Length: 203
Image (cartoon, rainbow, N blue to C red):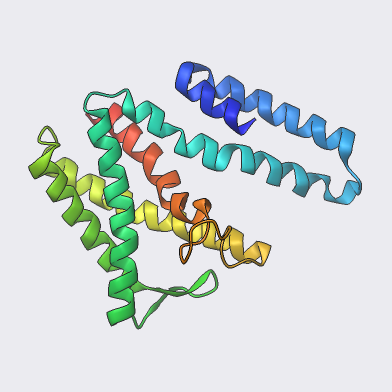
């Protein structure tokens, strides 16, 4: 179903809302037929639907970005900004971090690290404008740096919250020292839709 949602966004994005309604209905029907404990059906349905929508639905906005004018460059921009924010938050946080950002969710993240992540996001946006995305205004660079820098880090915190609830440190061990693909896509999952809708409605 996640693959079907990604395919809908790629081939028929106007039908994405219809697909989501259909997938929710199928999720509930699947739970109805297969449940073991009726007390857990609400939670099981919600978790299953979240799994369908979260990464496939959010990250598939990269398809939509690619079809925009300068779309390939914009995909590079969202990767640079989100991964740059991750790196900036990590290194600045390790060097200067004192004040906890969200200790109940991710004890190692700090306010100083978050500020470093925002600074790195702005720096990567400036580099992108000067090198391969000259059509962006300086206002666009500042707005996107704030939007993607803040919400990319919030996406990272949301993934940390889900992992903590599940009692795991990394989503998998597929990437040595970095965890799973979920750990690398959590920021992009929030940033990609925001970049797409910013370009559609603001530009």
